[in-house]
Length: 427
Image (cartoon, rainbow, N blue to C red):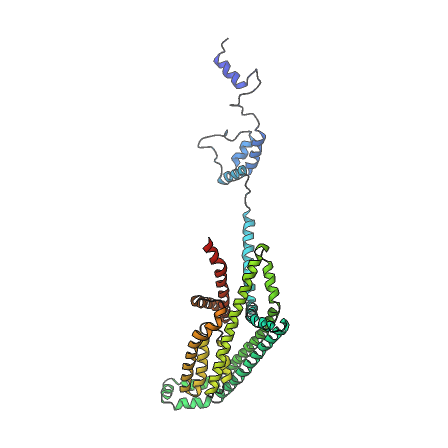
């Protein structure tokens, strides 16, 4: 029989009597499935519409539609997307706290490095001297001395040089300061007798101001404070010098062990090549530093012979100053020549000019004859690299940085020549 259409609609809504299954299109009284219930519980804290739908047994999408329908919040949508993909939500408090701890740790490390800057400089100078004096130690070893005896010999020579330098420098400075202090009144009288200074004194009262400054109560305190500051600086320099000598002794004794430990940090497959390159760097840099010391010694000897020949009373002192300043890159020889010329010109202006000309001529001979012959075994550093490295080292660590920068640049140059450039050419 044909079924009435109204009866068919009612039977479709109430379910199929033959199968016992309800129609899926309008069953709103059904409870949600396990997955939908879990999603409803997860999303319940992110939006009220999700919680209300789960409590009423509604599936997502069965809610009211139209302009009055509640819209899901962006945070809830983002959380539902993260839950569907299985991604964890970051804890921003933990991230911020970790970042703050990192910044605080970096600040503490920077402050610690600033505090130990002096110690770090002493260690660098000692290592610099140890590497530079290692060729001399190896030379003495080849002549039959054991390593400990060679190290003691070199250290004794360093101590002797430091003692002679201080002994020749301090007495002349003390004598000059004493003579200047005693002759201050006569200098003032000569200034008063000078027509130009007399005119200036009449206009501005320079002599009276100088005398009032000397006789004031604060002058003695300022002078005492300056003398105390100078004494403290001298004491700190002596302590630093003694520390550097002790560290140099230990570094020279343990230099083979230090290099061996550094090589063991390299994987075994590359250790032999790194060892060969490292030994070459130490040897070349040692030759470079030793060559600089030899050039400075030759300059000191030449200065001593010349100053003795012209009858200077401070020949040994000025010769040591020339030798020490010759170690400064770029401008060291010029500084020594100017110091010696000024000291000589105090007694004889013409002889001071002759001295300056002599040192300028010797500087050319040193640059084009002596230095190339001595430095031919060391690393050939380009003049541009020398100037740049000296400027950077001087800006970072002062005079010590300028001294160390050139050997460091020599080591980097050797690495480029032996490792980097061959690999680039082979690629």
